[in-house]
Image (tube, rainbow, N blue to C red):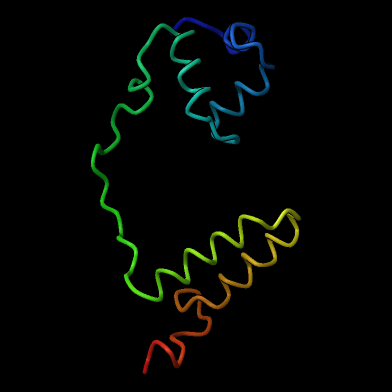
Length: 111
């Protein structure tokens, strides 16, 4: 777009290192920040999504008690403030996943 990272950073009132992290994908860009970047670059927000599938296939959430359990798990997990504890819980859940060679279906699921 003819603008350096330093120029964009100054226009957004952030460091050029932050712009670099956005560009490389090291940091996520919030919707609000993406809007501001598009405005400063005099482009549409959609510019950043060129080439992406407009309707990606997604896996629907399962129904019933399993869905409620997932929602409760996510809600409780999001309330864990300690990053080390969140990481440990995440590792535990991954290790129990059948796709990772962990525990498989529970008795509740198998009947």
